[in-house]
Amino acid sequence: MKVLLLKDVKGLGKAGEMKEVKDGYGKNFLIGNKLALHATNEVLKRHEAHVRKQKAEDTAEIERLKGVEKALGEVKLVVRRKLGANGSLFGAVTKDEIAHELQNQHSIEIDKKTIEIKNAIKMTGLFDITVKLGHGIHAAMQLEIIGE
Picture (tube, rainbow, N blue to C red):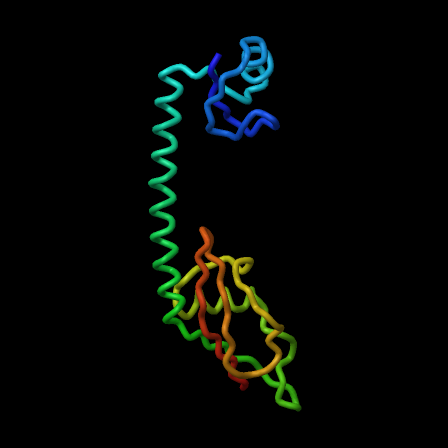
């Protein structure tokens, strides 16, 4: 019996693969536990349509992320913070503040979890920030901290 795996099955295969299995194993375990479907022409056509649709969505998402990467590369984000007596900042500039200022100044919305800062930003100056956008796309941008 041929089955189309819906989920990864240890020792058999990964989701989306078509496998030849014994009738009892296929009907009772795989199909019974909703791990696979009987590989009929209709099921295979639906699966292929789903795979094509997913690829098209992924391609559109990658193009959108490349546009965001280009926009972030051209951005120079400026954050103004109060300075202490010795010229250092009160606390560090956080990822949340960076994401908020990016939204306010340039209307680019990113999740604060995607921002990578190598070292805590506790003084004024220019800093390079990396943003992980997904699908292996990383954007670099400059952050300038100005004291008031």
